[in-house]
Length: 556
Ligand code: TXE
Image 1 (spheres, helix red, strand yellow):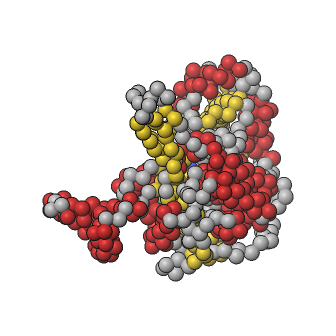
Image 2 (cartoon, helix red, strand yellow; image 1 turned 135 degrees about the vertical axis):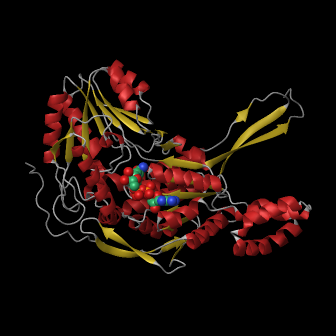
Image 3 (spheres, protein in one colour; image 1 turned 180 degrees about the vertical axis):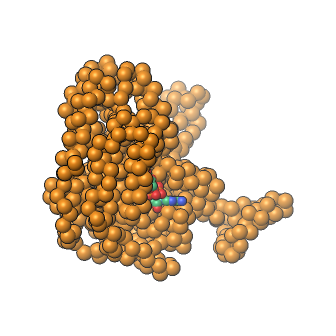
């Protein structure tokens, strides 16, 4: 019988006020153009924490315009890299100073344990910003020994305006993974937070001016995916389209002009405005490049939304896209593993952050010789897990983020039972209020069950049995995802063999979820494209320009 956590009492009252609820555009907190707001909810109760300004297409346009101006005309990409580095360091210091307030907002908005937010996540944000501050003045190109009498060099330049969309499971941490490298490289940003968790980023917005970040460099829009998010992804280089039309018409290219006009029909009213704006530019022969919208897009979220985002980017202006998507990470326990450590790490790999991690170890493969012992201990550990108010000290697991995720998880639990897996513990709501779910363990899970294939994103551990290494490699790799894997073995050859064979972006050997700022993170297959963190994370935000100059006297 399930007997772990104490019954839920009245929710603990958070000790901060929600002071910032508006959009942050061009260095100012502003209402949304539509005047609309949406509620952000407390996952412990489902009650409203605050009403937040709801950004949509028009606000995205305002924010992109501010970011573009800050890039094209502002000091940010032009100031010395050392100056940019100092501003990032000041921002890190300020976040560190406000650690407890930010962690409180994060816990309130997400339901994650306060100790996790205050002692792990906000410090990781600070560390990551300091790490990228250190990179700012170490980003440089190469000289290349090309054939012929040429001096060839590459310049690494910022791309321009970066569009960034983040999820709700680690709101401020994802915020830092996005802004750190983009700012270090000299880009400007329009970032959309997840609709479930707008609070921590808005709090940090209030610190930007004190850190010395010029206005327009970082714009933060709260709002929904289908509106604000989609318009950020498909933000067209409208100027560029118009310019093509004007050029073609001017060259009597009527045929092309008609095609362009057709393309413009749906944009009719905005088109006229842009034509008016561009005619003087065309006539005076101004540098039209300053009108081009240069953009990069970075997204963390579901694989389904990732696909939509790629389509929107391709249909608009082919902006390059970085995607960090879902996962179904194998956690492999070999017969020679230290079982107690493996049990604890497998528990952590799955249940950390209420199971809401893209890289959660959600397929626990255990060698048949140690399966029974592992299962018994894994179940006992789940039964000991402390579920409760995330503000209460000692709580290991708070509520899931919202009713949509709660319902999705319960649906998968039912599917596990219906498909014949053995429900060892949990499987139901914890308490009566909010979105708490009892830590759940399934054994006898088979690869073809939905609970072994889909990303559940909740506190549901699936334990599967294997016989030999070849078999477990084949089964671990037969997933559409490829984000991460855990390998537990005391034999270095076994560990190395598995590390090479697994088709995933990160292999943790005898550890899990080690998220240092220096280590690249990203997925194979449908878990994403590109890498974040570490030196690799800079590549998403840089253009490489080759500069070729003839040499007058090659002998020298
Ligand atoms: O994700 P979405 P949801 C997985 C997890 C979860 C599932 C659904 O399995 O159960 O996704 O969660 C924005 N154009 N992950 O619905 O939709 C949205 O506003 C542009 C894994 O919350 O991917 C939010 O800011 N943007 C994941 C962000 O995308 C759009 C973390 C994530 O929302 C958009 C979260 C659109 N058309 C969920 N639609 C991870 N990899 O860590 C939505 N968004």
